[in-house]
Image (tube, rainbow, N blue to C red; front, side):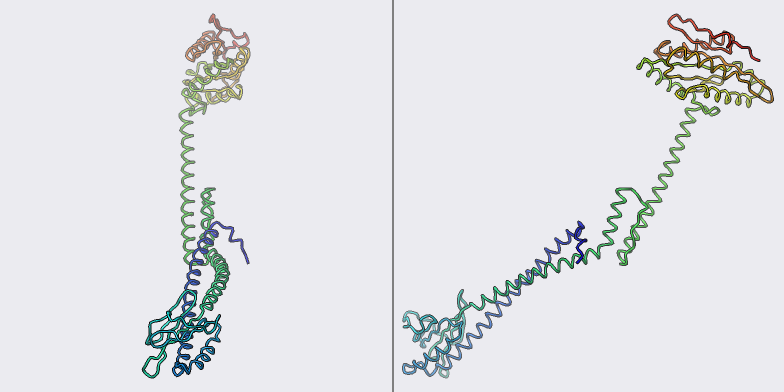
Length: 440
C-alpha cells in the first residue's frame, strides 16, 4: 500500500480526526453489541432456567409428600446434572424448605429458618453470581409447594469477555484499516485543493503570478481551480500594468530630473546641478584635505558670433565646444553649462596646482581648434579662470568668488588664455606666451 500521502501535514490532521471519530463510533457499537449480547444471553438463561424449574415442578407435584420424597430426590438429581445448576430447593406452600440440594454437598438438611415468601407464578431474580428462578408447584389450581433453582452466571461472564476480546481485536483491525482507507480517499478527493494551496503558497513566496493550477476532473473543484486561475490572470495583468506604470513614472521622473538638472541644448548639468555638486566637492576637499579645482570657461566674443551668424550657429558653437571640453576633462571631472556662453568644470582630486594649469591649457587649446560655421572657417577662443580648494578658499562662496576673479583677469589679459588664482596674496599666475594667440 502507498503511504507517501501520510507525509502531508493535512494527512496527519485528517488521520488524527478520522482515528478519533472512527474509534468513538466503533467503540460505541462495541459497547452496544456487548450490552445487547449480554442482555440476550441472560434472557436466554432466564428462559432456560424457568423451563427447567417448571419441568421439575411439574414432575414434583405428586412427589412432595413424605412417602414420595425419595422419588423427588431422584428428579432433583436429574435436574442438577446441568453444569450451570448450583442449587435446588423445594419448599412447601408456606415457604418452609423441605429439600435442599447443592452441587458441592448434594442433599443437606434444610434450614428451617430459610423461609421464602410464597409465589403464585414463576419469577426470577438476578444476583451478582447466580440467577434464581422460583416457580410454584401446582395441583390443579392449588399451590402445594415451590421450587427454587439457582444457576451460575459464569456462561454470561464468559460470553461477555469473549465478545469483548474479539470485539476489541476487530475494533483495532477495522479502525486501522478504516482510518487508512478513509484518509487516503480524503486526500485523493482533496488533492486539487492541496494543489491549489501549494500553488497559492508558491505565488505568495515568489510573487510569480504566472503560476496556474491544473484543472481536476471534479466539476466542483475544477470550477474552483478555474476561478483561481482567472484571479491569478487578473492579478498578473494588474501587476504588469502596475510595473509598466511604475516604469513609465520612473522614466518620466528621470526625464524631469534631466530637464531640471541639465541644459536642454548641450545635455550638460545646468547651474542648479552645478551648485549642488560643487557643495559636495568643497565639503569633501576640506574634510579630506585633498586639492580640488574649479574652472570657469567663457567663450570669447560669443554674443558677436551669435549676432553675426545667427542663433542656430550659436547653438552649434556651444554644442561643439561642450563636446571638445568634455573630451579634454578626466572621467572624474564634471562639465556644467552655467550661462549662455559660460561653462564650469568641477575637478575633484586634482592633485596639484600644476595639474590644474595643464588642464587649463588643454581647455584653451581644445576651444581654439578651427570650426566650420556656415561654410566659413572660424577660430573660437575662450578665457579660463581656475581656483583650487581648500588652497584658495574653504568656503563655497569665497571659492566661487576667487574663481570668478581668475576668469576676469584672464579676460582682462586679452582673452584666449587662462589664469589661476593664487593665495594668500591674491596674485594670479599668468599663462605662458604660447597661449596668448590672436583670433584668426
